[in-house]
Amino acid sequence: SSLFFLISNHFYKTSRKIPPTTSSPSTPSSSLPGGQRLIHTMLQQDKEKEKITEISMQIIMQTLQSMQAKMDNIEKNTENTEKRTENMEKRIENIEKRTEETDGKVENLQQMTQQYDVRIKKIEEEDIQRDRKMGEMDIRLTEVERDKSGLGWEMDKS
Image 1 (cartoon, rainbow, N blue to C red):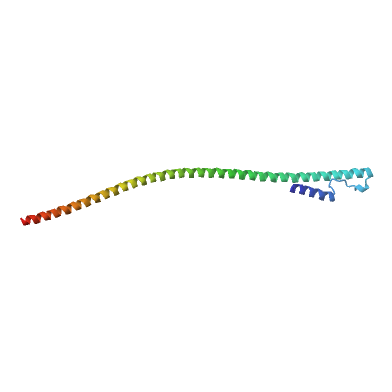
Image 2 (tube, rainbow, N blue to C red):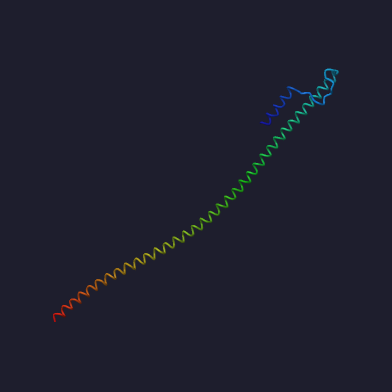
């Protein structure tokens, strides 16, 4: 729409004032006979139309070049975005691999922890059994000592 505005604005300005052309004959058109004056005016108008067309073509070409440059920039930006996306995908894959490895290590640690828990429970059970045996042995020892002192008393009597 801005191209249309530029071209229509240019046409409007040039149609209101027509500057003299440098290639026009040195004879003023008012001194020419009627038919030639008409031809001379038509030739001048044709030259002005050619100038307007040429200027319009230049504006169109500049606009096309500008659009091409913008399209090139968009293409470069798209390529850069694609490269960044690929790099992000690679990083995501690496993160996923490391996460899987970490998950495996966590599983191993959990298994080791369970094994240690089993060992600790076993040791605790053995300690409880030892404590029971020690208690039983204490009771027996106390009984033996009582019996011994009782025997000693009986021996003293006899």
